[in-house]
Image (cartoon, rainbow, N blue to C red):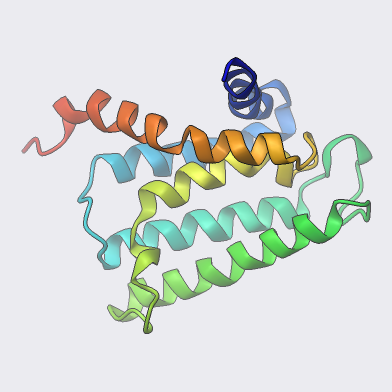
Length: 165
């Protein structure tokens, strides 16, 4: 378990070690904090938050320099995973944003209104998507293992600020 803990810390810390990643990750943290202070129910406002976060991340992954490679859209053995995840996030982000504006979710897409977990997963996979870390089963496992503890820490840590008028 300590191995997964160190992997998780590496995932969270890596974007702050590289100046080119900070401008992409900070709005995602802001979105996560904002989502923790709003309703936990899926609604159209949270769909807008999810849509913005997903589109923001996808644009960063598409057009920001890729890790140590420097070029945009560089091909390497892990490129298919990165491209599938990027275009999945872009597509889901567009659907979420349109759903938020139209005040109507497509069938089976109401999950796009749950922005808390969306932001967590976006932040957690960010260094792998920008090619600063390589996709591995261990890193994916750490993202999944720490999803609930991370959310619980945020939920209880921000509880005093929730619901104030």
